[in-house]
Amino acid sequence: MGLRNIIKNHLPVSSRSFHSDAEYMKEMLERMMHENAQLQRQLGAMSAELAQSRHEMVDLVINEHRHKKVHYLIGEAGFPNYGDELITREWLKYLAHVDPETPVVLDCMRPGPATALLRPYHPHFQATDTVARMTVENSFVEQAEVHRDIPVQDIANHVTGSLDEEGRAARVAAGIRLIRNNVATMHAIGGGYMNSKWVANLARLAAPLWAQRHGMPSIATGAGLVPLKDEDLHFVREVAQTLEAFTCRDEHSLEAVNNGEDGPAKLAADDCFVNGLEGVYADPAGLPDIMLCIQEDMVEGREPLFEHVRRILEAWNVAPDAEIGVVECIPYECGPLLDMLTQAGYRPRLFPMQIIFEEGFPAREGQRWLSTRYHPHLLAAAKGCEGTYVVVEPGYYDVKHEAVLRMGSRWTQSAVGDTDIPQPGPGFKDPSVRFTYRDEIRKTASVLYPMRP
Image (cartoon, rainbow, N blue to C red; front, top):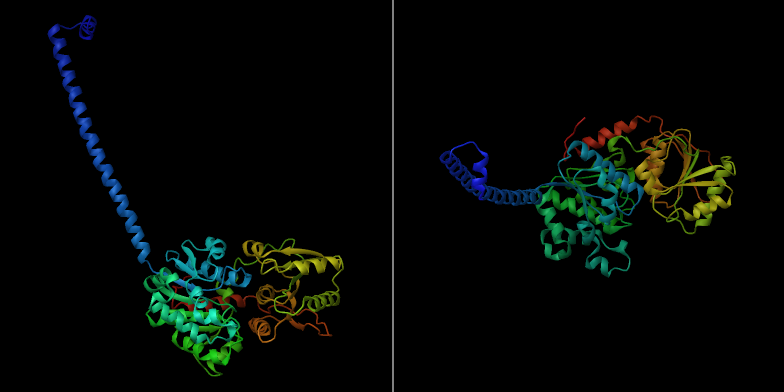
């Protein structure tokens, strides 16, 4: 028995009515199948259009990114060295506040570590080494036995010439094109990395010089340029006269650039004050009362330095079993100091660079500090800590510490071999001056970046 007869036997309808309904259902089914086929074709067409739109959108985003202007920073983060990382981070935080949608490119010698360290502080951050590599990958540096003997102008000419003609530095041609086509502003941020001691670093100022001359507003802020050789002065003065703004963090650098006159360079606080040191410090709970930051890289032989540290701790009546905080600015630099303190009966507690960078600088009121380094002196004194600084390289580090005194520190000075051991001097008389420094730095940078509350 067929399906039609089975259905017919169970339905109280006439044969004619049944056949009529069955034909109607068949027509409806065929129409639905036809409409479904049309719908499938329409969906296929829509899918193809959507895929094409997706490709066009991706191309649009790529092209927009390719042509979007960026803020270009020249700096020295990535080694890492706490002071350089601090300054770069504070500028990134500021730019994330005032201009978050504009990408920021940092040009430094070690862009990989710099990216890992600084990525959290700006939503559109990247690092490269275009200018940094041009200053060291050239015939002048490759043929010189002592890099500091190279005239900075020779390396600077290579940088500007390569920016004009990428074939001179083809390994970084992509980076050169980024500078030529995508830079809105260029900014050599502060620090002590550009001077005649490291002449290739000093030559990085050629990039903002070139940028300014090619219609890209450029500045240099918080520069510590000492030591600065006479043969390098002409280049630095040319940069200072050309840029929109040029500030120095110490009076020796300012006097050299301006030739002792009222020139284009201006005196300013360290760039780390750009945000008023907000968010820079660690939770004060549990921090040691005595803190050390002692470097060996600027002295000949560590034992005289360590003996001087021991004598200072004794003169300060630090108990033999006291906990002493040891701040590390460059990884691995504190091992011998930790050993010395342990052997002397103290309980050293290491504050590694990575920890103080992420969790905050371990300074609080009531501490006593002994430091050879510049930024630990500056940050601890600005927090109100008492302390003494030890000069380890006259002509370089004494200039740095004098700059901190000018900014507000009242710490005492000591030198290896001194027979008279000073008691620690007070920190900043007016800690709120950090906000004055903040406003001054931001005003200088306002030629590049919008100012917001």
